[in-house]
Figure 1 (cartoon, rainbow, N blue to C red):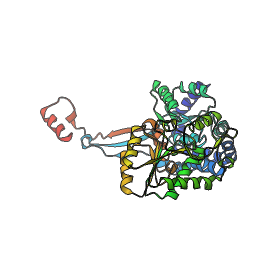
Figure 2 (cartoon, rainbow, N blue to C red):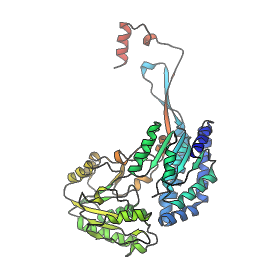
Figure 3 (cartoon, rainbow, N blue to C red):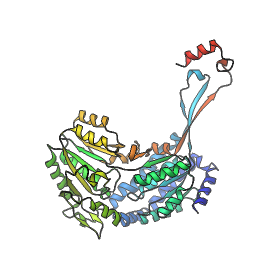
Figure 4 (cartoon, rainbow, N blue to C red):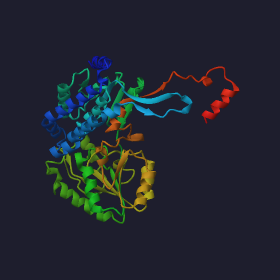
Length: 455
């Protein structure tokens, strides 16, 4: 079945219909109309899978996808045009240009934490660039997977865009097929499996992974604003966000004051009992719930620590001075737990971050310009914010992606189009003049001329 689907898409791609810019535009318009038509069902599915409030679901899932579609519709025609570039004088008379062409049949494998947005956002780039696509939503968010399958089926024929649902065995069978591009979002361990499978066919990949994203609170930071913006980034989706702040380094001079601001912010956002807040999301399943609360063992809790196994909710929790060797500091938390560690020198913070795997995101709260430049210049990470958290992922004007262990490749906006496009470089030579210098026989005079041009 999967093999047949891939071959049907390959045959459809070979008709060249997807290369027509109007065909691509119509596809994105159909997708936008379909999303709006099924909006209430999408919201309901996200509530069922992750207990997301409608506001959060629209802000972080549906709204982001619609904004990406809007941006692509406004710019894709210019993205697809030939780009003329300078030609070396040694190649006179000629012109040079770069053409963007689609890879062909693409595979998009999505995670469960933002099951709608992280499945549909890459699709926008794939369609804008002129590809066909096979989507594999996460089986851990079954309600959202089901509505995505319904949405895509109502918008497109399967030889153009199709959804394959199923568990890990289905994913394994999909990866046995030959695709022209694979886009994967998820954990590092599965990312390695995807890359190994792609290597068999020399298929290019984008891997959007994760890691432990640090947050640094400098002594010059506005503590109240920092607490609000940091907790927003941490508790959205109950911390199940690849770019969520994973641990905090806070200057010892403001540590106690900052912790108090964090406690106030948690109560302000979620009330005195976050577990009873109907707008606060749950952990995706019991396995991840048990994994997260396991991080509390042996830790000193500054705030929170409550959890409910029936509802799979965990209160936002601050931990005091977690050891670098503790599991909570070794593994990506992917939940609402936040170790708070004091520091005296920014250089010790930089050394700690640099000796570990490169993070997907980094957040710095400071009004010290020199300190900002030091951190940005000395620490490698995927992307991040100064005086805020996570909002960098919501801009179509910038790419989003990891580096090193946190991923490879980037997307959003124009970079989504470029990710799913091959750049074909062309030199077009004129016939009215044929300079014989490059041809045999090679003489001393030709050699001297070549040295003048190529140096």
